[in-house]
Length: 236
Image (tube, rainbow, N blue to C red; front, side, top):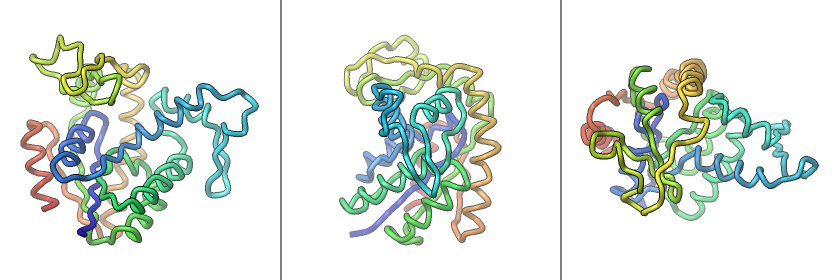
């Protein structure tokens, strides 16, 4: 069985989620979204008592408080890299054991995460089977897309904003209510997320290059179909 990992990275609103969903459906890849892993952890943490030992996660000789990490996430700042790396690595190992091939949307986001996660991916899937694309959009496009974004309550599908979907209130894919992501997609939070991307995620481009990976840049401001065509050209 051919092993395959596709990593998509880029600023908020670049279309990583949309393209990952398309790749998942077209190629039978497991859609690995770090944001959903974090949402799941934070949702469980909401019911924890202040003195619950389950609030804490240990990794790389450090301890992390789920409730404090949740506050960071809601502010638009990145969660502590060791905390994220712990969750991601645990999930990657489980999926590899189940024979899943992956498309990663939103991870790694920092050099620390890359240094911890990428060697695990190489060991489990082989370096030659890891393809990486960087989707680029301007800050103006990021802000517009995120402030207009809606997701569905049930499956967390992101609905592309255009004239046809502007007044849509029900997800056409699963029938659940369309909502805005509370806290994460307001203008000030998006500006914080953009600053975090520039300072902490953009350096991954050089990290991948220096470690022997070819990273292809893609114009994310083209149509969804054109961006998808470019990605397929890279990975096939």
